[in-house]
Length: 216
Ligand SMILES: *[C@@H]1O[C@H](CO)[C@@H](O)[C@H](O)[C@H]1NC(C)=O
Ligand SMILES: *[C@@H]1O[C@H](CO)[C@@H](O)[C@H](O)[C@H]1NC(C)=O
Ligand SMILES: *[C@@H]1O[C@H](CO)[C@@H](O)[C@H](O)[C@H]1NC(C)=O
Image 1 (cartoon, rainbow, N blue to C red):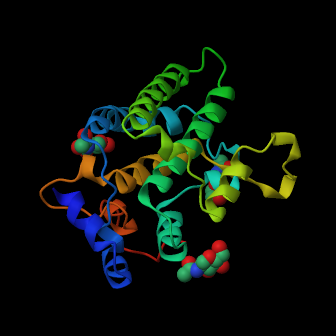
Image 2 (cartoon, rainbow, N blue to C red):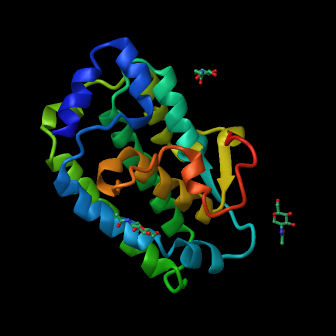
């Protein structure tokens, strides 16, 4: 199978460098069904996460919750010993917090409330399958220090976080990151015959004019 060979190639440092852009964790195929359902929901994000909000409306998030393709790229290059599963766990942790924050700012009758609650349900379904499809020991392993630091900041009591550490982001931009990083980290579920590089920012800019500048 495909992932066996990429796991084997991981052995050598050279292989690691060359393979970084296409490196994949063996995503269990059972996880693809809930992730595709999530992808379907996310296709309506412009309507529910932009049009139903005031212009430039932002929510306060941890800086680590601005989790973009560029963060994943940087972490893959920079952090030795970081495996895909760890990044996937981080993805679940980050987006769980984001969905919670979004729901919290919506009154019960907000026109995006039901959409967001459903998104969260679908997200939890995917998380359940993710956890079940790996042996429990994997989730007890220590995280690399750098990831543990991120994790600790994500789960810090909000009133212990100093004001300058917060970031403000629009719901739509958070959902864009959610969607793009999902395709990148679980690319086996989304790959088509053409083998897109979902982790490259250029893939997501296709609809737009040109590459303006590298994503920061
Ligand atoms: C994910 O959603 C997009 C629409 O946002 C759609 O074009 C694409 O086909 C979907 N991918 C899968 C694998 O369902
Ligand atoms: C929204 O933000 C953009 C970019 O920061 C700014 O140019 C625009 O004037 C803002 N619009 C409103 C209505 O505040
Ligand atoms: C590696 O990480 C450090 C600190 O997190 C950062 O300053 C540096 O720019 C990163 N290097 C690359 C190549 O991204």
